[in-house]
Length: 222
Image (cartoon, rainbow, N blue to C red):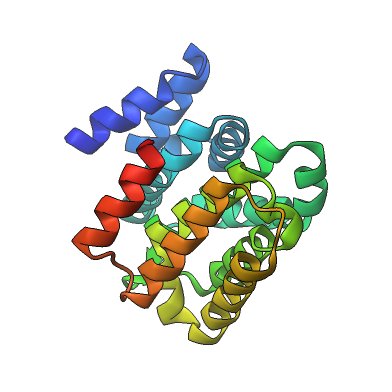
């Protein structure tokens, strides 16, 4: 019940007609156009950072409801198709709007986290998610605190799962981050702190010691 209340709360930012569409999709997906629903969710996720962090839960609920009602996967297929379209246009998105790009990365990582097949992340999302994180680790992105913050947040959330799906790519990503930290002279002090924290986070088996946690979070608070 708690999750439903949270989902309803996130839906409040939509107009009444769209709220009705989403509420129906959550309970009776067969009664609505699920492609339209997936587009509504993606469109909102690309412009609303708070929603992009929570949308995975709504998508998970609709996928479960559709599977239970009709054993179908129309919504999941539509969602993945739209994610793929946005993925192909990611460089244009980043050039047009940094906020929209950060929202897209947050959203695809959220979907990776929530939507599972046989309790495993969807293979179709592994490389696109990695590609997005690699883009955030490039030197021009490391100059933007917003992108560094997004990268670190996603690695906190899904780094462990992602590494289990492909450890080689995670090693390559962390080589980039280590080089960025050591060699990049255009980093802000906050970006350096965030990178150091994520390097230590992975080195500690995707967790921080109490001492490290106190150090980093007191620094961030200051």
